Length: 130
Image 1 (cartoon, rainbow, N blue to C red):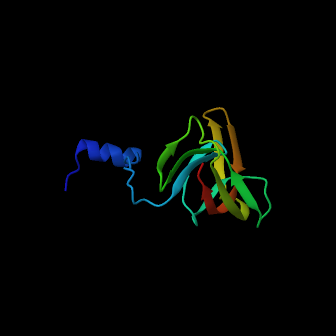
Image 2 (spheres, rainbow, N blue to C red):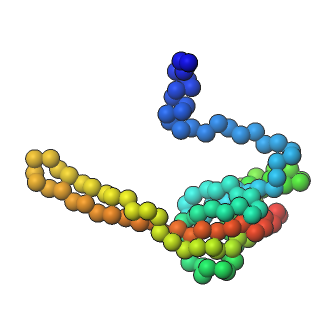
Image 3 (cartoon, helix red, strand yellow):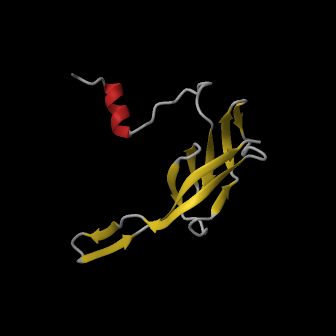
């Protein structure tokens, strides 16, 4: 089967399709932490950039950009006032090593470094809407 040009470019670029919000969707929120945004649901487990909280403790994510619940969608300007997400820290760790290699051709210059990004794995316990 031949792919159309539009379908091929979407799959190569990795662009996500826009997801329509339905009324029967479960409670979820979009939070910002570590300069990144995450869509979270209760009991979901995810890795976020490192947060200085011991394992087993509760971390509160108060930068909530959007909340979807029984009352509908609430979009913040820029954040939703009074909304917060409570999560339990499961693990503190470091990602797999990536190799950073620099080379200048014909100059006998090369430099090889490794980097491991720290992360915090959390489990969402509760989403508190405003």
